[in-house]
Image 1 (tube, rainbow, N blue to C red):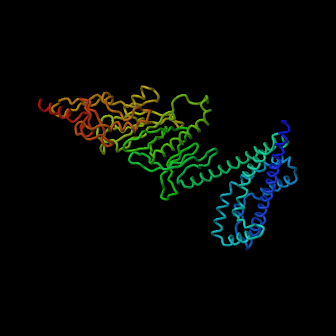
Image 2 (cartoon, rainbow, N blue to C red; image 1 turned 90 degrees about the vertical axis):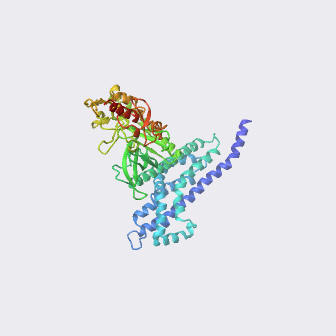
Image 3 (cartoon, one colour; image 1 turned 180 degrees about the vertical axis):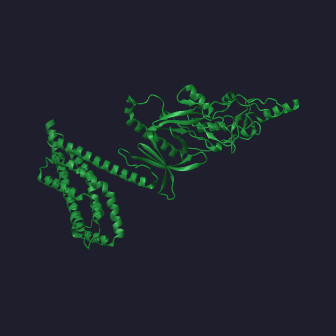
Length: 529
């Protein structure tokens, strides 16, 4: 009963199978005829004209138009010959024998877009070429097919083989003698199709990287490198010391290149190349003044930037995090390197994002007002803006070229010294002089460490910088208890070391004391005198 049913199913499937095989042979014949038409009507005549008075296009242009189509024709003529000579029971074996040679299609596919662009350009700018093409298209053997449609056929042929073999496999009984070979041929053609598609993708990526490289002025190194792929590009605003500046980011699989816009829309000025395995990217909460912020942290230079929309920000965060993870996984074997240094180096340290100059008109440690002579300095450990007196010490970062000296504020130096992560160089200081404004009454200078301990910190940690912008928001909460002005990015919150009240920098005339405490002290002195 089962064997009879199986025989009936085989009889029902056989006619469809034969139709598919006939379609494979017929489409192959039409395809070979089309390739031969390209060769006879276009390629050979144009080549014969090269170097003569009748030359229409150069030899290089002929090669760019037709690539290796002559070699493809040789392979497909052989495939057609074997298909026409074979029985219906050995189709699979024929494809198994010839599929490896179909990889030459990748060369043609890589050149296809350039060929179409060149045809369009020549038709627009070369009257002789346009006349020649129209004449060849009008030939009876061409069937009114355009040159562009003929050039498209090889690109479509490999996917067509895949569909035909898949259909043939579905209509071939599993017990058929050719079933195993058809299945194997289908897998091989699928692999060749993937190979051609991947080759096209790599070629297009390489062309895009070449175009990017040409557009960046001052780029020190070639962007093309083994294994490197292009991922994403976009415009952001970089938060700098003195202003917000537009930047163009180019993200690749192993590096991030950032530039500034050039004079022309298609040109960019090179700034820096960042290696992805040495950076971290962190999200930063929105504040009232700036939104959609994220930070890129590394040992040499860290910076914050923001996008126009939350969606753009999330896209950049995801793209950067994935690229960083991929490049670190590819280099994970280095973790087991016995020669890897065990001490902390510059790569183990994230440089801080510097707080913009406009956000502080007083030292963030001692509250002294900055002037033309009393200048700002940025701590290389936390990014705070401090004066010279509060940043006389330094710590050292170890790099391949040697130790790098980095200036830091007193608070960071104290923490670095306690943790012992880096070598510290502390400058010996003279004791603070007693100030006697009138007849020797001792104007007490508050203890610096207690003042630092009481001061509201801009950074929550020396080495944790993700909260820098959010801490600015904390600093701006509330209003001054004296002048009642609301705290903001240009009006900072301070705390009197004497009475503990909250006040702004304008109400802090000297040495971290509020205006009433300061005036009260002077009044008391004058009354006694």
